[in-house]
Length: 117
Image (tube, rainbow, N blue to C red):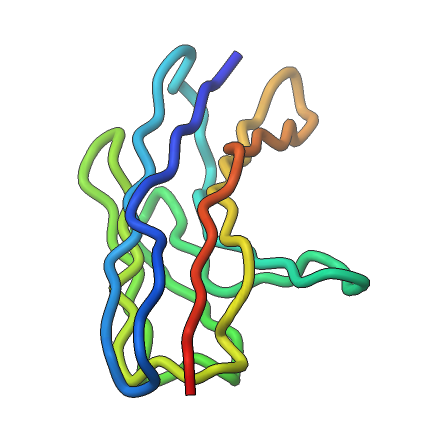
């Protein structure tokens, strides 16, 4: 099992910045990738950014150039700059572990980000 705990959400004005953190614990072996997803009411959870075990990163088009994902051992971060009201969502930390040839997804409880206009 992998436990994920997010922090850093809050209320910020448009144009501002926030830094989300995710601390992972438990069985961290074979973690292929970690990432941030977000969800708003009535919509599916969507990928924001992802980082592989080799350090490759992937971003949603809507956040490219504004958000930066990073990882240091069991901690992962999302630096969010130039925030827009449409970035308002609950942000979830995700880890994907390869276990006996199958990918297992783990999720944090989420942290709310609200961007006011």
